[in-house]
Image 1 (cartoon, rainbow, N blue to C red):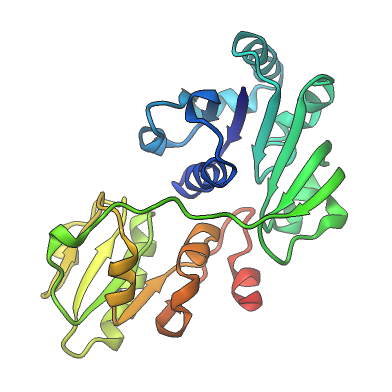
Image 2 (cartoon, rainbow, N blue to C red; image 1 turned 135 degrees about the vertical axis):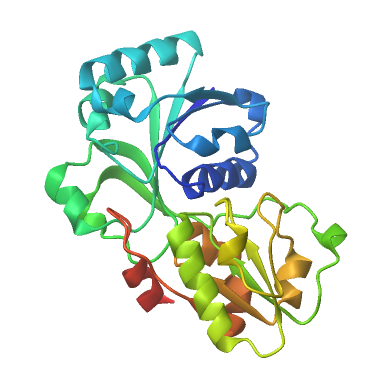
Length: 268
């Protein structure tokens, strides 16, 4: 059984882990996912999802007790940690050294140096590097393996009968960032329709003419191909999913507490 530590407010963290499960062909019934994300309802029902509030991860003692109990109850033999090697609040820094009989795996993405100034990385058996630009000197591990995620098949969106030509704005949240990307699309528009794909609830009075929100609908390959231009942030998952469409993609990096979207854009 696999236990996945997935801390992150946005959908990107869950999406990355689901893509890892898909790439590794791990049976969903063998997965337990621990997360604070409000998007926990996007996890397939076959995966046992343990949703905890933010304060749970801040309590080192209770977190460690819960982790050990979880490993025992679900007969976990592999712990997979998404992005934050010591946990978002450092809660894994003391917990992982206690897991002597558990295989530990880290899915590594670009992190700001500020993270490692606060927390030290425990030793992982395997660190999978998911992108270029990762400062491996900040990590502790027995083995490093470059790893390419495959993207889970997208749901169809042809039923929307999208008007052409169209621009596509893709950004999960928050609303303010989605609207910034929308404003960028408006600067380029001549006669194109604009579709905004987001989990954010966009007020109708914030959208101009010839604009629709398609939140909650999967964006498939055909929609990406047919878009005249694609406007996105520079998060890990977005950059992975839009790799084939760089020539028509407009990327606006956003500031994050620990992710460095500006560095990621420089490396494209």
